[in-house]
Structures are given as C-alpha cells and as structure tokens.
Amino acid sequence: MHPHDKKYIDIEQVEMVFHSKGKAFHALKDINLQIHRGEFVSLIGHSGCGKSTLLNLIAGLTTPSSGNVLCAQREVRGPGPERAVVFQNHSLLPWLTCFENVYLGVERVFARKESAHKLRDRTEAALALVGLSHAAKKRPNEISGGMKQRVGIARALAMQPQVLLMDEPFGALDALTRAHLQDELLKIVAQTKSTVVMVTHDVDEAVLLSDRIVMLTNGPAATIGEVLEVPLPHPRDRVALAQDSEYQRCRSAVLEFLYHRQQHPATQAA
Image (cartoon, rainbow, N blue to C red):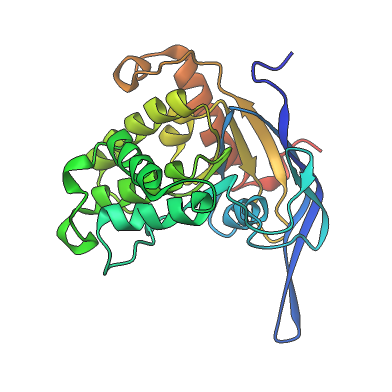
C-alpha cells in the first residue's frame, strides 16, 4: 500500500512533439507516471530533457500530442484553480503591492463565492504563511528576490490548490535564501497537505524535499529513466540529514543516474 491516499495525477503514455517552421521536435515519449495525493515529487534531469514540458502538461498550459493527463480522474484540458503554478521568476505585477498581487489570485478563484472581507482574510493568511505580513504594502521593487519568490508561493497557496506545481522555484536565489525557503516549503506542505510536483536541477534539493524523485533521460524523446523512493521520515532536518546514510544513498543514486548513466547511456541496462 502506498503511504499516500490514492492516485491523484495519472499520466498515461504521454508523447509531446513540438512543430516549428516545418520541423518536428520530439520532446517526450512514453511518459507513464502516477502521483498520489499529498505526495511531493521532484522531476530532475539535464537541461533540455523536458522537465518543464512535463510540468506544463500537468498544469494544462500545453496539451500532449498523444496520451492522457488526468487529475482527480478528470482529463486535464487547460489550466484550473486546483493546480497552481509557481515559476522561477515569480511573475509578480510590479505596479501592485505584495498584498494586491496575492489578492489578484484569490479574487480570480473565490470572488463569486465569498465577500471582499473573506478574500482579504485569505490574502492576509497566505502572506502570514510565508512570513511576509510585514511586507504586504511594499511593491516588488522594494523587496529582495527571496521575498518576491515567497509572494509568488503565497499567491499560489492562497488559491487553496490541490496541486502545487513549481518550476525551479529557488533556482535564481543565493544559497542561504534557497535553504531558508526550502525549509519553509517543507513546513507549508506539511500544513496544507498539498500534492507537489517540482522541477529542479539541484540533487540535494530533490532529496531533501521529495517523497519520490523522477529522473528523466536526456532529450530529444526524453522518457522516465528511473524513479527513486526517498524513505526519509518527516519532519526533515537538513543539518541532521547531512550525516544520514539513507540521505547519502539517495543522493548517490541520483548522481549516478545523471552523471554516469546519462553521460554514458551505453552502460544502461537494456
């Protein structure tokens, strides 16, 4: 029995071919993946292997050339409020305050059902969750890169999504800010029990945060090469894990796949 409730996202025989100027680019092939409710899954692989393409398929921002993407047993036919996306560049509107940027997402999802007072409460609660109540009235150009990224996460969380999709959310941040936000994300996910799918290049980030790590082969026509279970108990402490033998085993397995099997694909088992 899987430790999480049940299959929530189901990707069946997905292929993705892009057409541009009369040429076809085969980005993904034979993608089969089931993600359980409340699970944290990382997608990792070399640049150009289709990680973001796969995330965009789950988000409904692109449609597969063939195969199916299901969420809660319904076919994904476009973006939906149950699936919130956090991009690397935070995507905040510079003329709005932090509060207004979050409120915009809340209003889009809940305006027909709730009063303006309730929408404000949701916005304030989301900013508090990421530790930014004090910056509510500031505009993006008045806050740091890490704070901007937290506003983007707050906006996504305020929509109360069932699935949080993150495309290298901490990739542009310095190491200390990145570590802080990873720790915050672990706490937030424990509170909200969201299902999370995250694209990352960072092996340590993937092992620290994930229940499973999905490793993609090199493109073109990338597919899932391996899926690694990360059986580390929660809550996770990065300092304690640094000396943990299971953490090191998981880390080595991902590095072996990325930097040996993908650099020398002939050594892969048939």
